[in-house]
Length: 582
Image (cartoon, rainbow, N blue to C red):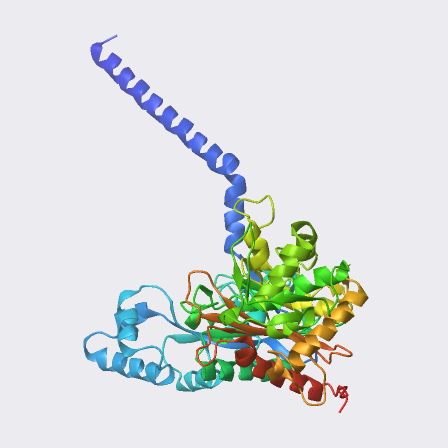
C-alpha cells in the first residue's frame, strides 16, 4: 500500500471519528434536552401561554358598637408612566411636547414636582409608578386628558372615614401588602385579610385568555367583619375634650379609658397625641407616651406609668378585705412617718393632718396614711397577694396590639427593700398601664369581681358569627369590702381632693393621683383621676391621665374637670337616672 493511500485512509478515519464524536455529542444533547430537561421545558412552555392571576380578597369592615363604620375599603388608582417612550419620542423638536406633558401631569398631581417628573422620564427604562391612591377627581381628570403613555391601575385601599378617631385602637393597613399593623388591624390581621383567590387560563401570543382554552378559578374568601365595643360618639367627645385639656394645661399629652363597670367592655379608649391612619406614613417620626414611644402605640395599653395615689385604693382594699381596718379606723398623722427598715415617708408639701380616719386618708390623699397601712397593718405577706390579684405585672388580655405588663419588685426579687412596700402603697416604685389601673376601679365598682376587659363584641366570618360575652376574671375582694371602699371614695369626691369631679345629680366615687417620676423634678407630674359613676349603681368606670401638665400639676385640678365632663356626658347620652339625694 502506497504512502499516499495510507494517508488518505487516516484522513478518512479522522473524519469518521470526528463525525462519530459529533453524532455522540448531538445525541447526548438531544437526550439532555428531551429527557433530562423535559419536565422543566414543558413547564416553561406551558407558562408562556398560561396566565395566573391573584384575586385579592376584600378586607373585613370594622364597626363600632352602634354599627358606624370605622374602617372600610375603597378602590383608588395608581398612576404609571412608560419613560422609555419619552426617551425615544421626545428628543430635539419634541421637547416642547414633553414639557406640556409634565406640566399637565403636575397640574393634576401637585404632590409630584415637575423636576421629579423630568428626572423619571429621562432615567428609567421601565414602567414607573409616580403616584399612588389618587382621588376619584384626579382619576377622572387624567382619563379625560388622555395623555400619551400614561395609564392608571386600580387598587383597593383601606380607608378610615373618621380620620384620627380611635386611630390608636384601630392601627393601620399598608396598601403595599394589605398587612395590618398595630391595634385591631394588626392583632386581627389574619381574620380581616381573608384569603386571596386565583384565576388561571390559557392565553394567546398577546396574553389574552383563549375562549376555547382551559381555565380554573378559585374564588377569594372575604375577610371577617369585626364589631367593637367602642361608641364613636363618646370616643369623639372625649377625644375633643382631651385635646382641649392638654392645650389649656400646656401638657405633653394624655389618655382616657372608659369601661362598662359591669361587663368590662371598653366604651372609649383615647390617647393624644395621635395620628391619622389614612396618612400613617406622615407620622413615622412622631412619638407619643412622653416622647419615648411611637405615636402608633395605644397609650392606654402600652405606656406604663407610676399611678400615684390612685394606687391607695388597692392598699385600702387589701386591708378592708382582710378585716384589718374599717373606714373609721384612725391613726395620728404628723405629716411624716419613720420606719426602722425603710426611709421616712412624707405627705405632699409635708402637710400634717393629725388624727384622721382611713376615709380621711383617701380624702387628703395622705402618703403617710397609706404607708402606715401597708407597713404597720398589712406587711408584705398580706399586701402583695392583692397587688397580683388586681392584675399588676400581668397582661390584661384585651388583644389590641402591644401591651405593657408594668413592673414592681416583690420580696425576694433583686433589689427589693421595705422601701418598695411603703412607696408602692401610694403608687410609687410601681409601674402599670392605664387599663390595669382602670380595672382596679372596675373591680371595686362591680362588687369586688374583676371582669375580663374586651374590645371586640362580635366577629362575622362570612356568616359564621361569634359573640363575646362578658366573662368573670376572678373575685378579688368581698362585696362588703368593695361597698365600704366605695363609700370612702364617695367622700373623696364630696369633701376631698376629688371635688372637681362632682356631677350634679349623681354620686361619684373617685381617687386622684399626682405622681412624680424618680429623677425628674417634682412639678413634672402624671396627673390622674380614676373612679366610677353613679356610685350607688356603677355604670361606667373613667380614668383620665394628663402627662406633665403645667398650668396645674395636681390630679384633681388637672384631670378632674375632664373626668367630670365625661361623667356628665355619659349620664346624658345613656339616659342614666340621677341618684344623688338633694
